[in-house]
Image 1: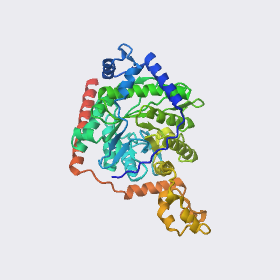
Image 2: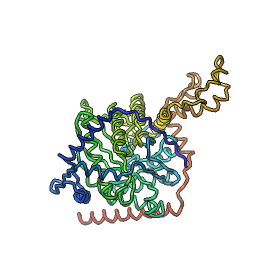
Image 3: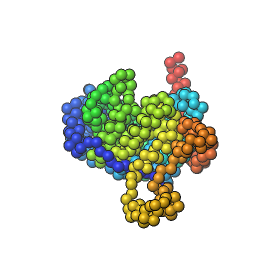
Image 4: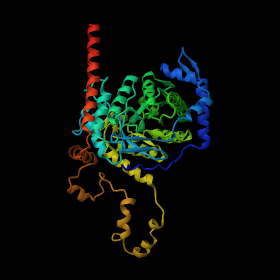
Length: 492
């Protein structure tokens, strides 16, 4: 199945000397201070590999030679496969992929109401994203408050699979939940071997800034390493709060956190696919919040893409984010700026590109559709300008230069490739737009989202496979209900 994967232009903000300095500073941080590792097996892996492990403080100090030796085992590229394994994403070179926003706690729905997320929203968003051409990957988009915390990972992944053939997130919070998602994937694929051959789940491991690897996410990353499912390592450092206020200092600390995390995967199972990533931003010192829509996010993403290439690793960034609470001019400006900078840096995966408001705490149906259009425009920019004998069009200029090119066969042959043709943004004259209803972009996006939900049909999962997945979820749900009832009776 052919997937349109735009290729980044690799605009670089750091010199080779800058990269060498950040690397050198990172090596000094990991050698002198180290990183706190809260998961016992990961401590054992570092100890066995030759790092300096203090079991009392759980601090791990790592020599540069061990870091370099371990990082060489990580693949420089890999592929992921959708629920339909014909859907393939290639994480190599400068190929860029766009994902929807994830883990929102609120939803701006298609009536305009902002409310807590529900499981139905997860399925609806997946169905819309399945239809939208410029969205490649579907996250665990919304935290559903109508499903217990201990179970929503299963219900959300099933909802994504049922409503889309595209690649999806997995879940790596604790070993138990990570294993349950792997078990579901084995049902989907037919075996654990097929899960490893054609990975359907993307895990995440956010190091805790400053300089810690949490117990729960490290547990999950180790499970995913066992089954060779790709894992993102992306800290959420805040310059001035949980990281140095200078961007170079933040990049140094972030680099230490990412490299130490990637080492866990490679020490557990060499060759496990990983993404070198960032979710970092600056702290807005006036209001005390993360400035996810600030220009510094773009700079951090550009530098992170370079650092990933420095270590020959695929990269993950954050673009399309906004601090706006509404689908308004601020949302459009911040979204477009951060998405374009991340894409033009050659970032392989722009994780939260589409649909997020309020620093991704709110998921907007309308903005999802709008951001797909922005991603399409960004993709056109990434293609650049093709200069060839055909595109230079000397014969056309000489033939039509004193008239116009509307009737030219050359125009009809080339304009669809050369020109971006919006599916949502309105370019009509005022009078024509007014006669068509005069809808603003948010209302038009709402209309399109409703149309997709009504008309878009997703290829269903094979009935026997769907039944087995449903049975597995029911089994885990019963076990959880039994354990909570036992716990209640004991406490009572």
